[in-house]
Length: 135
Image (cartoon, one colour):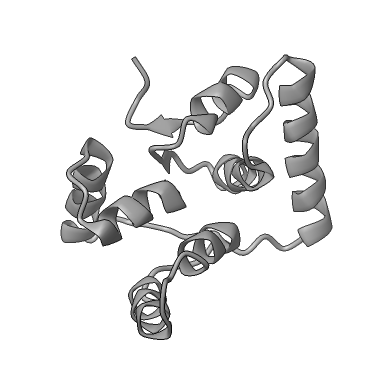
């Protein structure tokens, strides 16, 4: 599964959330937990001091990274998804969320998140599978 920065940030803070529990269980079972470049960027840019940046980078460097072979096609797909959302009357708060969604969709991975944008994006793009499942 692809794990969004919203879950990683909650995990690193020690928040008590269902999504963090799902991440911990996946890590404990050595299930595949993946990163994508915009997720790594979002987590690391939140570090409040150099030591924390290095610590978080060390933790996340242990995980496999989804790297798309065609950066132009990936950027175009994310831009198109963002535009489709806008055409449907939904404006995601972060364009990066569309880029993250494209990584999940293109690699047939469910996305573990705790970000309000993803359920809205999934209404426009049903191939985006979310964890935990939405009610």
